Image 1 (cartoon, one colour):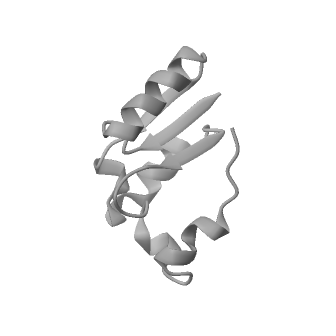
Image 2 (spheres, helix red, strand yellow):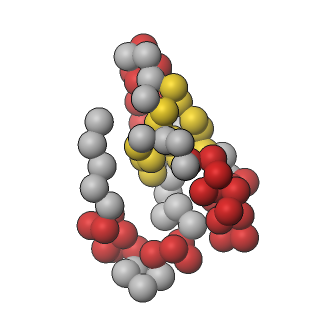
Length: 82
């Protein structure tokens, strides 16, 4: 499965990335570029084929997307499973 991970270079992200790669998943690290507010279309193109997107960065992915919900409720709006 293709898995997009923001924060893949951090402590948790690196360990999770290593583990998922050993389990034969294809990891798509999401760098800072596509996570900027003005790069929403680029982010969509990168993750459209991902089965899962995991956010381990210190901020929400493209915060403008969650503006109506607020940061606290952003994770409540997304169901994630591995």
